[in-house]
Amino acid sequence: MARIIELRVDQLEPGQVVHAVARAIARGEWVRGGADGQIDASKLGPGQVGLGHAGTGQASGQPGAIQQAGGHQGDDGQRAYSQGAASQGASNQASGGDDDAIYVVLLTTQGCDFVGCGLKDLLKAETGASVGAYGFANTDNCECVVQGNAGDYFGHSQLSGTLTVMGSVSDSLGAMATGGLNVVLGDAGNRAGVSLRGADLLVRGDVGSHAGYRMESGTLVIGGNAGPNLGAQMRGGSIYIRGEAQSISSDIEEARLREPDRLKLSLLLMKAGIRASALKEFRVYRKPD
Amino acid sequence: MNTKKPKGSGDGSKRISEGRFVPKSLAERLEHSPGLGDRTDTGCRITSQTSGRKLYWPVPVFTRLGIDTPASDSLRLVLDRLRKRCGISVVGNSLQQSLERSLDDGLSIAPIMVDEPCSLRSLMHAEQMELQFFRSRSGGGGGASEYYLADEWIPKMPSDLMQVEHLAKRVELYRSISDQPTVVVGACIAAGSIYHDVRYLIDSGLDYVCLLTDAVGGLMPARRWRFESIPWGIEEAKRAIADSGVEGFSLFLSGAIDQMEQPLDWIFDGVQAFSIDSVLASRSPAVVTSSASSDESFSSFLGGNTGYATPSAPSYDWLLDEADSWLTDWSSLRRFFMSR
Image (cartoon, rainbow over all chains, first blue to last red; front, side):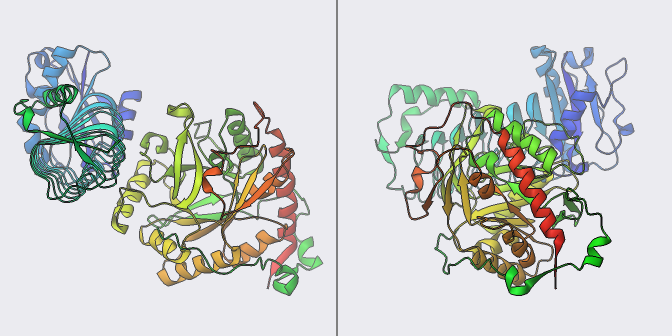
C-alpha cells in the first residue's frame, strides 16, 4: 500500500528534510489517517509528518487524503498544495501499488534552500513552491517535481531518478550529477551541467554562459539558445543544441547527428514529456577524439 | 586556489631548548596525579563559527591515513580501534556507523573531496567534516567501499564553485545535513598561497583549516612528501586568521615530526591539533621508506607507486602499539612542560 507524507519543510532546519523523511519511514512517526483515510493536519505539530493512508478516496484520485494544516504554512505552500499535489500522488499510488512507495509533498516557503537534499527511494516528491539553492541535491531513485523555479545547484550530485522543474533554474544546474535525468521546462542560468559526471540534463529553453563547463560525461540537451563559451574545458559527454550559441569553445567541435543521437534525443524528450519534434534541427557537440 | 610556491625554508623547531618552555616545578607536578597514561588534560575544543558550540577532542592528535593510503578494511578496523584506544581522531570513513562513543574516543572526521559529487547521506551523523582541496581520483569498487587517493597534492578549487559565496552556501549545506549539534566543518589545504587560501576559507564560514605541509602516503612502505616550511606555514595561517578578525578559528597541522618536542612548539604557536602520520610512517615495519621532494612528478605518488610492491593483505596492528606508545610519551612530555 502506498503512502503519502506531507512534510512541512519550512518548519524544519534547512537540510533536515532527509532526516525527517527517514525518521518517518523508519519509526512510523507520522499521524495516520482515520477510517476514511483522512488526516486532521491541524493537529500536526511543527515538523511533524502526516501520513495519508491509502484508502478508497485516494484510489479514486480524490485530493482529500491529507487536509491542509493551518498555522505556520506560508501562502505559497498552501496554494500549491491545493493545486492537486495530493491528487497526483493518489493517482500514482493507484497505478503503482508498491508497498514501499512513498509520496512526499514538501510544503515550503518561497525560495527555501536545500529542499529535498539526499532523498532516496521515494515514489514521488513534490514542492509546493519555488526552491532555493541545492534543491534536491544528491537524490537517489526519486521522482521529484518543483512547482516553480529553482535556485543555484539544482540537482547537484544527483545519483539517479528524475528531477523536473516546471519553471526556470539559476546557475550550475545539475553540477556533478552522476546519473538520472534532470529536466527544466524553462531556462537555465550560467554553467548548466558544470562537471557533469554521467547524468542527462534537458533544458527546454535557453542556457547562460559556460554551459557544459568541465563536463566529463553525460548529456546536455538545450532546446533553445546558449550563451558564450559553450562546452569550455569539456572532457567528455555530448551537448545537443537546437538554437544558436553566442560562442562555442574550441575544446569541442560539432559532430554529425547520427541515428543513435536521434534515438537518445527522442528518448530523453519522451521521458521529459516533451514532444520530440524537429529532431533534425539539433546539432551535437563533443570533445574531439 | 593560488598555487604559488611558498618562500622560506628551515625547520626552526628547536625552540624548546631556546627557553620557550620550562619544566613545571616539582611542587606543581606533585599536585597532579603522576599517572603517565593520564591524558585528560591534553584535549582541545574546536569552535563552530555558526553556533558557537565547541566540539571536544580528547587528544589534539589526528591521522589522515584513512584517506591518504589505499583504504582496506583491515586498515579501517585498526583506525577505528585507534580512535577508541588512543583517542586519536581519524580522517576517513569509519567502518562503524554507530553514534555511541565514549567521550574519550577520537572523532571520525568525514572527508569531502571538493571536486567530487557529494554524498550527503554519509554526512547525516557526522560530528566533523573536512573539505579536501586536492585534485583526486576515486578508487575502490564504488559505493560504500569507495575511497579516494590524493595522487596529486595540488591545491584544487572545485570546478563548480567560483566565489566565496558559493563555497559558503556549500558549507551551509554540509553543516545543516548533520544532525549533530556541535558539528564543525573545516578544510585541508596543501601548498599554495596559504595566507589567501586561509582567508578564503574563513570568509566562507569554515571552522578550521588543516595545513598539509607534509604528506605521508601508504604505509607498506611509506612515501613522504614535503611541501612547506612548517614555521612559515603556521606564520602565514596565523596572520590570515588574525587579519580576518574571526575569533575561535582553529588551525590544524599535518607536518613532519622529527622530534617529540616539535608538536609542543606548534601548540605554543597556536596549532590546536596535529597529525602523527609521519611518526607512524617512520615506525612502519616495511623495509623501505622513501622520501621525495615536491618537485618530482606528482603523478607518481600513491596511484603510480611503481617499484614498491605492496604486500597482499598487510597487517596494521603495529599502528596501535606505536601510536599508543608515542602518545603516552608525548602526553607525559606535554604535562612536564609549561609555557611562560
